[in-house]
Length: 310
Image (tube, rainbow, N blue to C red):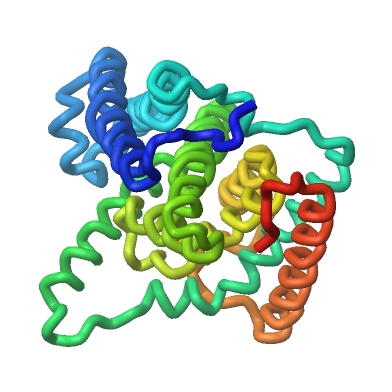
């Protein structure tokens, strides 16, 4: 097994190569194949409909197919190919067996839900942020971009039948959890930590990049905090399954909550940016911090000598 799971190249060169690979795969190659597949199932001009998703609610299946293919190719298959044939690394080395999976799954779930409640005031503040006059052009671009993203999400998650829900769950919860964690924690964070020789700097830089690449700046700060949470879980554990689980719970619980809200089973709209009550926030902050301390102690107590605990 390689001491460095990603590359023996100079870290900055490795980071640039990874970013180029992700850009080519997730922005160009993956979407190209996704759009080509979507045009085969969409009755109409798919590219034209994509420019006005709110006016074409029938585009949902095409959007799901194109996004699923783009994520699979750009965030999973190409990184695997890059590691295997360009760096001679094994993808399976990022994923480790755990002897206490039931306990870890439960604790990761509780920590993920605790974090969601703990940062809810940040979510509310970031969603309602007002830009100064000198940033008005940027502010308009941010809100226009956010409106397009929200319209796409609204179309994808509208009136979910059980079958469509399963399809949406795969595209929204499972594929991003695996692909984004492989790229941003497994590859980029690992190389940023190596480049900066400081795990905290590397983790936070990867989190900022993870948030920025979504191009949804009205959720930039909470997404950065989530990215840091995922980053520390990976750094301490050395096991990509741990942040994948946390990422999956973060996305999946929201989607399940939205589905139950649409079915009338749940009275609270999980898509609301409104902060949780103050007492709930305080309790959630304490719980999340305690669990983070537990994770650090648990994982670093069994870490190899080459891994210095953050």
